[in-house]
Length: 65
Image (cartoon, rainbow, N blue to C red; front, side, top):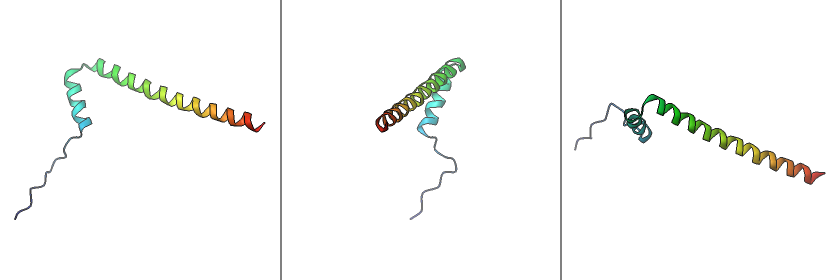
């Protein structure tokens, strides 16, 4: 029995495939807007996490006094 041939090229990931479709369907400006929006979402999440950590710290500090 012979082994199946090995592929020389990597199979693109699902994300790579989505980006390829996106590049065909959207203009550069739309892509930039989407990327900026996602960056804003991530930054909002980071700030929310920082607020929660600061609130916990203040509550702990108030409890120790």
